[in-house]
Length: 204
Image (cartoon, rainbow, N blue to C red; front, side):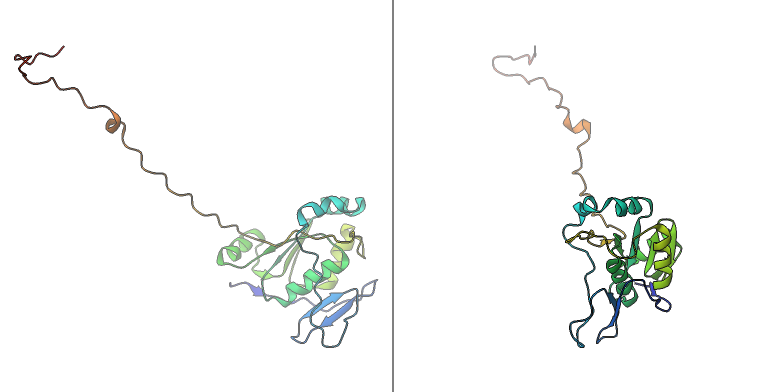
């Protein structure tokens, strides 16, 4: 893919209790609930699911106002531990966000043109941009934008599913070749030749 993965800086303490969970595979995640067991893997709860399209209408008024002024877009890639950490941070804090995935060379090229960066994760919070995952920087910008420090999302809220950064459209099927207009003109009538009933071959 060619996109470098940049891990964020140190993790800062938050006002609410947030559990930083290191799974058996070494991935770091965040949750407002402690792990059920010591061998539990990463805690998901990313808030993405099938009800994304209609979910924004169910947001509390205060949160909807902040989202309208300072929308959050997260650019991620598959098998990107810092991306997982960033996604979990937004989800635990209850920040509605759009996720765009960078998977192909076209995605990487477009990300470079769009942001001037090729590192992931990359996040935009209104007009503010952050390269790489940094809990303290992300939280500071979210605070300044007015996002609540703890989740206000209604029960069952789901963000829209992640979507590709570049949507590849299939080329339209070529139209069948149209015959030139000359081919559609009826051939000129030729006068009939002489016949027994018209020995002179005269046509009327």
